[in-house]
Image 1 (cartoon, rainbow, N blue to C red):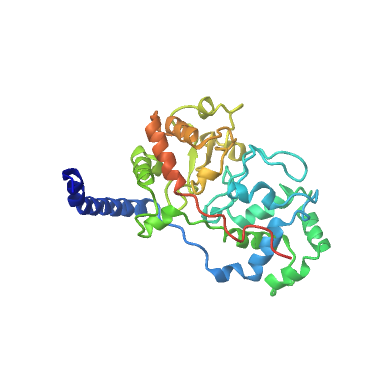
Image 2 (spheres, helix red, strand yellow):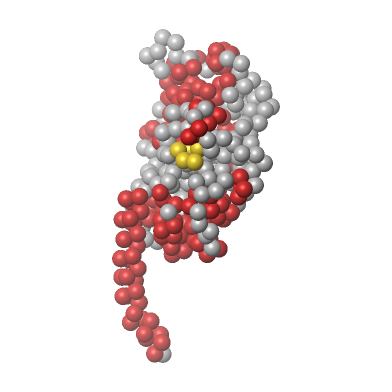
Length: 329
């Protein structure tokens, strides 16, 4: 055996042990900052409520134009988001902001970019007169009767005197969406699998934490739980190239302190949910990382730092849930 090969063989056990120690230290730190996701119990998926929610989520007939469903703005190929900058609704109008992913969304304390809807059920109810296009919520419920949904609603809400209701529509869709959880390699690493993430991704996690990204992108979703001004260090639109500034939550509250404030985006599946930001103004993940460094942290990240963080974000990509599709007839 050559001397160099012998030296490597002698050092290998020590290097492996050192790597295990480093991985464990990183795991402990990451668990404190983030925590991990777990798939829903299989029994949950077979409940009558979840089955109804799945039917409603994918049914294009239950809309004003007969062509639009909840799923129309949340494609499986886009990991529950929409690759289009803005999404068309059942009236043929475009949404004012980019459609975020529906995967893992249920545990956020506020939904949509302005966090103006607090629960999945409230969001679903609002979609009746929003994306589904009906003039009133009652008109949407009338369409469900027309489509013969009565039996499915009775099965899901047997104790209700009037099961086909706006409230139960929201509850059913929320129950289905709550099952759309996507554990990723990152979660397997946190659970103890040192090989679930590549060395490059682990280095990216260290960079992500050291750079300050985890201050807002924390918790099991790596974000989604805070409201924050977009542009703490400089005006965001000068970096994103946005055609016009969006005043954010100010549009709802009319409070000066809410100007340019948005819900912090969760980063689960972020590598598959381009374009980025509330206006879909940035098309690639590395550019989005660089923009965030400049406008939120006041830092110009070099190419290596950007690539490192982007590599880590790839480890947050889970599998599209097997039940994310229309139910079999």
